[in-house]
Amino acid sequence: MQLNQFKLHRPLFFRLKQGVWLIISFLFFTTFFPWPSEIKVIILRVFGAQIGRGVIIRPNVYIKLPWNLSIESDVWIGYGVHLDNDELITIGGGSCLSQYTRIFTGSHDFRSTGFDFVGEQVKIGSRCWIAACCVVLPGVVIESENFYKAGTIIKKGELNENISHHADEE
Image (cartoon, rainbow, N blue to C red; front, side, top):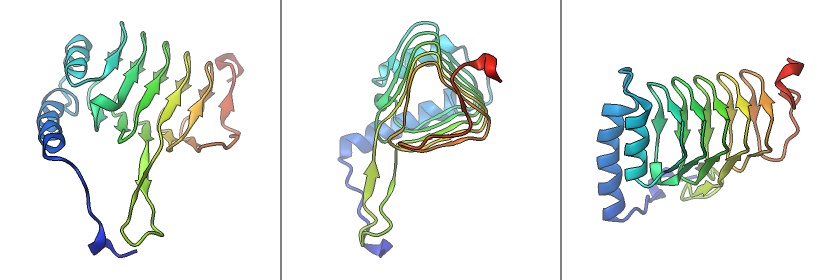
């Protein structure tokens, strides 16, 4: 890999939109001030996110690109959650992302000389609980009604011993 060959191709409009989002995000999302979730939901919708009713967004939440975010109704986004969503993240209704969970939709191909971006969507089904400090990697599809134990690294297409199909099994 030759990092001096890396080129980030982003149109001017995209950069301006992202710049405005970074300022708004700093003021309302990544702050420790507990702004009401209703205000955060309105802001996300203005920036192109698809958000259902009854969504709770705790303080200090990082959302990279709100226009690549779809959240159904009655979802809990916990304190310190990090959504690095260069590609679409979809979260089904009644799901919970516990504190400090990280979701990534992209990375870079270390084998390419230009450090090319490689991205895949992430889909979390309905009534799922992703417990504290989990990491969800690009391309993951989590079926409805699944629970992942705290600290689990969730990889695409990999069965995981830290999954329980019913919360009452824990």
